[in-house]
Amino acid sequence: MRRTRRTRRALRVAGAGAAALLALSACSSSDADSGSGTGDAGSSASSSGKLSGTVTVFAAASLKESFTALGKEFEERHPGTEVTFNFSGSDTLAASITSGAPADVFAAASGKTMKIVTDAGDTAGMPATFVRNQLEIATLPGNPDRISSLKDLTRSGLKVVLCDKTVPCGAAAQKALQSSGLKLTPVSYEQDVKSALTKVELNEADAAVVYKTDVKAAGDKVEGVDFPESAEAVNDYPIALLRDAPNADAAKAFIDLVKSAEGQKVLTEAGFRKP
Image (cartoon, rainbow, N blue to C red):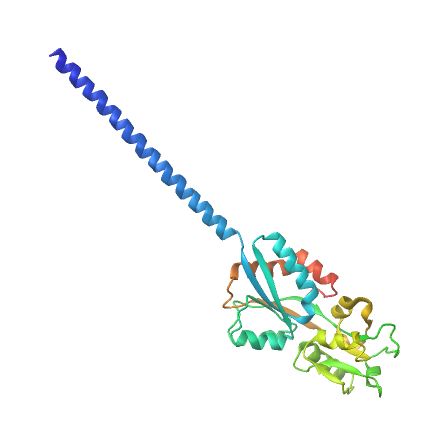
């Protein structure tokens, strides 16, 4: 009888130990699964929170210097990202986007050009104006032709270059000329503002109507001349996330940088005006 009680007691202890062992094993397994799940969630959160990959930005030629600087800043803030740019005339860029060219962001030099893209349904949401730009006359260094007004550009023998009428800087120049009742026949129409400015830098033209920002970026290669009619042709610059952006998260972050206080500082230092 005593042996039977001892045997039963031993069995109960063994059973309790086995139960404890099973419980511990289950707990450990649960902890491991939980730990693994937490790790996965953390990794996923980290992955979703960390930007990577290439951001492709189509931007008006006049944004080249400031956007290049902001692109470098973005890459420093987000290791593992790369910002690539396509700088050109806004109308050329708009045509490329509506034709299916892959891009994440479009920054145009006019609302009219951006409308080409929005009307085609190629933007995600409404574009936002982030800066404004005003025209200025770029002359040869020292202004040897003594150009002091828009009217001076109509003088006989003066070689003047304008942006093409379909390009925002060209449309703005035409608006300024019309507001002053002036007619001007340039020696050439250029497809973007940088090309117009280059004609003066290379001494292939005496003057060009470009943006203040381009004159400033050129430094001592040209000289700038303000003219009051430019106030009648100020361009708003809108920026938008594109509908089929391959890297939408990073694209949104780049747009946020452009619109941030730091981004605005870079742009205003380049000569742009706040919207």
